[in-house]
Amino acid sequence: MAEIITLDFQNISIFIFLCLFSLLCYGLFFKKPKGFHLPPSPPSLPIIGHLHHLLSSLPHKSFQKLAFKYGPFLHLRVFNFPIVHVSSASMAYEIFGTHDVNVSYRFVPVNKDSLVFGSSGFVTAPYGDYWKFMKKLISTKLLRSHAIELSRGIRAEEVRRFCLDLLDKARKKESVEIGKEALKLTNNIICRMSMGRSCSEENGVAERARELVNKSFALSVKLFFSNIFRKEIMGVSREFDEFLERILVEHEEKLEGTQDRDMMDYLLEAYRNEEAEYKITRKQIKSLIVEIFLGGTDSSAQNIQWTMAEILNKPNVFEKLREEIDSVVGEKRLIQESDLPNLPYLQAVVKEGLRLHPSAPLLLRVFGESCEIKEFYIPEKTTLVVNLYAVNRDPDSWEDPDLFKPERFLASSGSGEEEKIREQALKYVTFGGGRRTCPAVKLAHIFMETAIGAMVQCFDWRIKGDKVYMEEAVSGLSLKMAHPLECTPVVRFDPFSF
Ligand code: HEM
Image 1: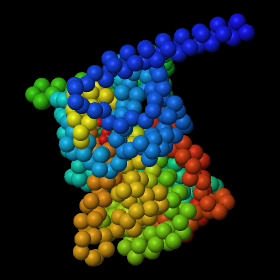
Image 2 (image 1 turned 180 degrees about the horizontal axis):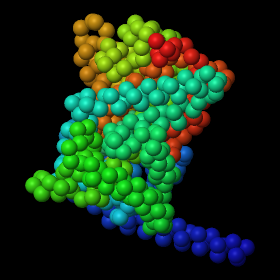
Image 3 (image 1 turned 180 degrees about the vertical axis):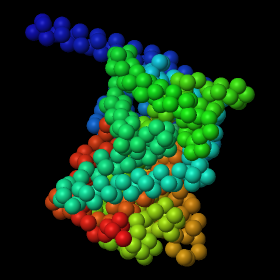
Image 4 (image 1 turned 60 degrees about the horizontal axis):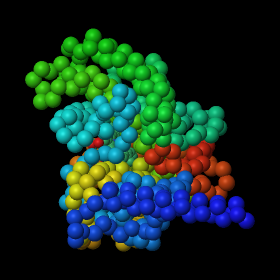
């Protein structure tokens, strides 16, 4: 009995101590000017704050659940880390519109010397001169309409290769994992667009890049604990470094007089230019290439897989899509990029897939300075979490938010419809928002529209069971299918037989 009482007394003392300590931390971290209020906050526990609400395998859904109960603009705390969570289209619009510059800093684990999320990166860079210089360079040389036009031939060849591989599998009656095939496609294209003449599926460079991307993704959670996993992180970084150094040297040797230039050529040109607005380093070139691979290949492939899963579950959408493609492309050739502007239903299907399944469901930024949003006070250095998943499914903005309805993105001929579509674009945040928004929206749409278009045009698809299982899983910060989509292609039309 005496033991129990002593134990209880100890527990109570520990509890009181934790409460006082927690209050002290809270007071220190949330000092705010008199008369200002933090955004609403759900009940929290001493020390851990709101952590218990967020512990789940699908953090975007835990945050969304809290938002349904307590509102779309929340102040949360995980230990000493203050967080502001945004989950409605109107609040996201306010943040990316009025407070854009103040939230243009990312919350990322920066591993000082590493090429993977290291301090020399563009994605990790604070908003400033280096970021502005690189953003201009990648936009003009790789991602804006004119640059995209110049690389159209590369993508046409790779989509052709993608279809030939699927035709081969179909003839052998083998099943395919759509995500894996799509990753091969996006990886090959990005490899050739960024490091051009050095890589192809045949010489093994594209495959090596894919291997290193997979190793980097396997690190994703460990990147947040860089002190513990430093050796492993630096190991992958070194492998990337050796791989890219070899390709850089090849580019330097062949730079003079090269006609078809790739992203690495332009980066090398900026690196050698003494008069450039910003003097970039060799390490920054390599970091950018790594980031383009990490940011562009898996995200696009995941979205191809999710969208294909949606349309396999809805035969009426599949049929409508096929009818549109047949009527525009005809029955003698493979769909190509120049067809895309004439395929509004395909565009709508892809947009709807991206709306429901954003590959990065949570966007993490940091408030550079303290500010006031609506009538609430946000202290400087507060982490901003924009729940892209929840914003894209905000019931105040979308009718039947959880249903796959591509028609919502189609403008009918009636007046006011275009205006409705424009408004919807503001509520659609799969690619983020403000000045740090994804610079590759156009390219990502092209990847998805051509890949899905080709798969619908050329094949029927056999799935196991009646329906594709749509359960979600999160790996690192990416939203994946818990059960990767596996199905068997059956040749419907071989565009290469003519
Ligand atoms: C479906 C495909 C894609 C999705 C869903 C996607 C999504 C995103 C998101 C959510 C962000 C963060 C935006 C923000 O902070 O507001 C981002 C940033 C970025 N993405 Fe994408 N992305 C895709 C494809 C690509 C591709 C193909 C590339 C490159 C070829 C790319 C390159 C980048 C880069 C460089 C950034 C960093 C921009 C910055 O920090 O200023 N992304 N992307």
